[in-house]
Length: 516
Image 1 (cartoon, helix red, strand yellow):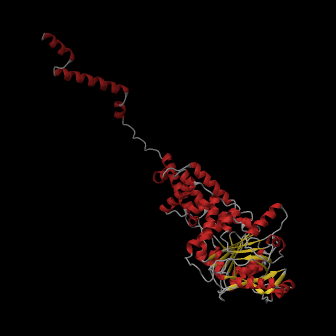
Image 2 (cartoon, rainbow, N blue to C red):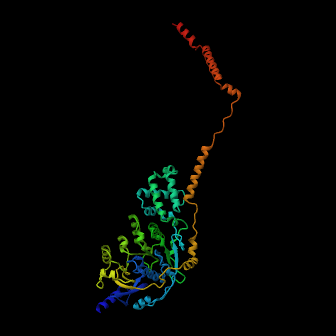
Image 3 (tube, helix red, strand yellow):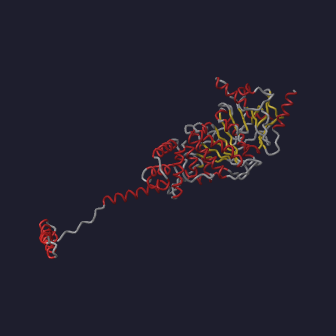
């Protein structure tokens, strides 16, 4: 009994926060949920990021849903990556059933079904707000990191952006980038080398192949205009609740490079646009990345370094990022060390590798006298998790086995009719619906090449003006006989003149002979 009392006291002191907070469950000890020891999340530290991990079917996505609902309820905008397609139900109220009723009875909490303000978004042709970005917005450094280029190739990409900026040639989509690459590697190479230096044809070919690889994952639909304004993620509804932006990326499972490209650009844009905020009472935006291994799956070491840098810095902008994945080891250690909140659902020990993962996961949590963490991780039930976080002073809270509340919204997808109704009343859908293809690098350079080709063809096909026909006298004078007569007459005249001057060759010789 003393252990139970000390445990309740430890939880209440560890999870009592001065500022606003959300309740996500009740602490458990010996398999019993304790309504006297509720577990809260402080809003003040939600910008310190987090991890939700656990095996398939243990309730990770529902935990994500619960936290997103809690944040929205207190006016914090949320963005969630809906990889599996089951988070759109946030827009509709849930229904009470026997399991939910039993769960809430254990915690002595009331279940109130509720729909939340939701904006559906898409990177492809799915219904919702279309998210796009231009090549120029990525910039040469980020584009180079995404494509995994070496120093020489990065220099060439920087040259392309410089050339386009100097000549007011917009780089909007990938066909603009490809056309510029082809131009500087062929027809425009000589002119550009005079001003910007030597260009390696091998490098242009390598970059072109990497862009085509990105295109094969569907990147063409993402690059273009109108580009998405990140401020549209930070909105509240008329009743003051934070709007939950649900990005429907169910088709990203086999396109990890496109997904990581989008995520990195979005984080970089948020960091560039949002002002420094310092420590806020609650975050400006919280993002949840479900199936987070897709972000890191094909990321190069340089790209991982970029993600780590942004994760470290973006919290000062008031933005929190939560990764949701099956295995904590899916997240690189350098990123994992930046995550303040950890929610660990059950892991399965089927193999030696699984047991090693469980041991490593257990070592990442604070020591506790109340649980054998190695064993408990494999015994957690559905909707149960081990939780620890940083409190308002940055100190880790006690590790607690938690019975989590269930979502108040629907734990299922929306129907097609419900999706149509939701998107029909969205002004953001209308704002970004129509793709804009204004004159940019592709059209400008194509016109330039066409004009050069026309001039070349015109020069090759233009004939010089015909020479005027000679007159009869000119024909006679130009004949071989006339020319011979002219030469003979000239010789006779010359000799006669020389003779009259006493310079004739023969007479001069005679006189000189007589002098001696």
